[in-house]
Image (cartoon, rainbow, N blue to C red; front, side):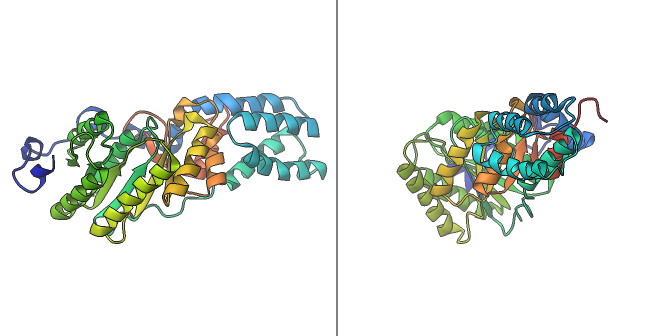
Length: 339
C-alpha cells in the first residue's frame, strides 16, 4: 500500500539486500551458452514445424516451378505469416524463378531467408532508460505474460545497475497485483499497488510520486488487459498517459505491447487495436518456444511497422532476449545437426 512509501519502511525494505530467489537466482545460464545457441533451443518447435515443412518440400527438387511456389505459399500462410506478408515474400521469388535466376532448391531456400530477413528491420537503438524516472507503460490482453515480462525486464535492468520500481495498475484482477508483488519480493524491487478495484490512474500517480521520492531510474507500469470495447480501452490508456505527464511531462517514454506468439494472427489483430488506443513504441513477443509456427514474428513486424524489442523463448529469467533479426533468421533456418 502507498502509505509505506513515504514513512516507515516495509519489512522487505528493512531486510538486507540479497540475490533474487526463485527463477531469478544465480548467473544467467543462457548468457554462458551464447545468444545464438539459446535461440536455437527456444525456436526448436518452430524450426521443426514450418521450416521442416519447407525443407521437406524442397528435398530432392532439382527444378523450381510455379507449382512449388504455390505449395511454399501455403506453408508460409499456415505458419501464421499472414497473407499480405507472404505475398511480399513470394512476389520477388516468383519473378526470379520466371527469370531462371534461382538455379535449384538450395538457392530458393537461401533467397527465402533473405526475403524474411528483409521484412525484419533492426529495431534500432533500444530504450535509453533515461532521463530518470524513465516510464514504461506495458499493455496487452490478459494471459499474454505481461506481468512476467515486466519482471524479466526489471531483472535485466537490475543487471545494468538501474534502480527499478514497479507499479501494479491492473487493479481489476487482484491476482495481477499479487503476482507483481511476488516478483518484486524475489527481485528485491519495490512495488506500488492499491486495493483491488482502485482507480488505475491513482495507482500510477502514487507510483510516480514514489519513484521521484526514491530516485528510481526506471518505472515499469503493469496495466489491465481487459479487451472490453475499443472506446473504453482508448479512454483508459489516455487517462493513464495524462496522469503520467502530470508527474513526468515527457512520459511515458516507451509503450511496450506484449503479444503471445502462440495466438497467431490474433496477435496482429490485438496489435492493431492497441496501436489505435495508444502510441505503441515497441513489441514484446512471448512464448515463441511454445509454437511450431513462428511466422507471426514476421507478420507483426511487417504489418505493424513497430519494432520488436524483445522475444520470449522460454520460462527462465534470462529467456527474454532483445530481438536480433539476423540471429533470429539464422537460428530459425539452422539445419538439424549443424554446429
